[in-house]
Length: 93
Image 1 (cartoon, rainbow, N blue to C red):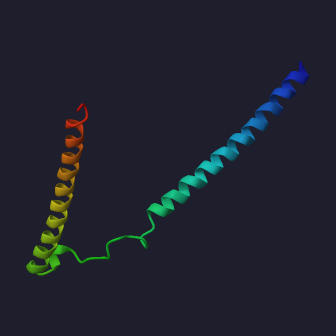
Image 2: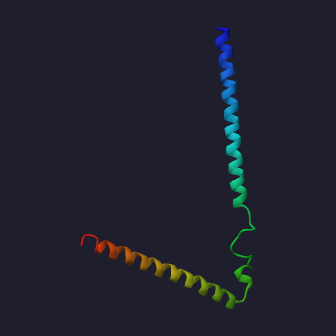
Image 3: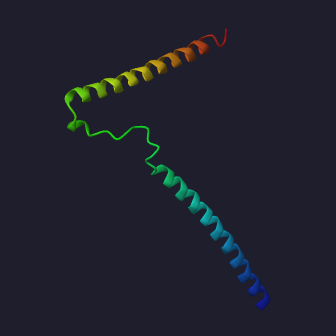
């Protein structure tokens, strides 16, 4: 009975150490990914001043640029849907 108890304790210790190593690897992977997300050097947009500190002309230009991008995305989506629907329309022909 003492041998079984000792074997059980050894079993628990071995598996506990393996679990700790697994948790450590997972923690390292998570911390690396969090560090990459908080990295600000790779941002696409340069630091811009708040829009309310800029002249109204600058705000209007930013809005115009943003709206043209939105229009391009919508137009591309419409064209993509049209191509898909035309394929489906001729699917059973």
